[in-house]
Amino acid sequence: QVQLVESGGGLVQAGGSLRLSCAASGSIFSINDMGWYRQPPGKQRELVAAITSGGSTNYADSVKGRFTISRDNANNTVYLQMNSLEPEDTAVYYCNGDLFTGWGTAGDYWGQGTQVTVSS
Image 1 (cartoon, one colour):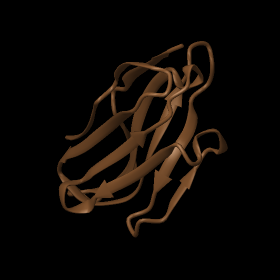
Image 2 (cartoon, rainbow, N blue to C red; image 1 turned 30 degrees about the horizontal axis):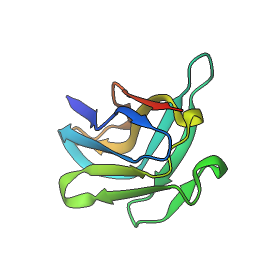
Image 3 (spheres, rainbow, N blue to C red; image 1 turned 180 degrees about the vertical axis):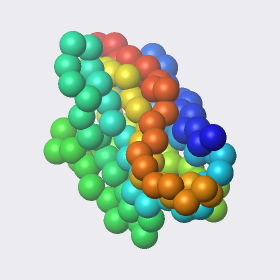
């Protein structure tokens, strides 16, 4: 069984900061790309930021310069540092991992989501 568990969401005022964490556990052989997605109320899920195993990153235009994605490969953990938060960042944030399991299978795994609410 492979699990991705997010933490760090919450309620923050506009201009504030939050740091999300996502730890992958279980029978994992290796993790390729990891990423953060979000789903605002009434909207589709969208990519926020992604990072390769080598550390290359890409960001949605709406978060460039405000959010930073990083990862700890030794602990199968990915982070999202969110600064200068805006009400438009309010969403459920999901962690995603493209990984190989210890059983020799490959696939996309998702966390359960963590709510981020930014008040104006």
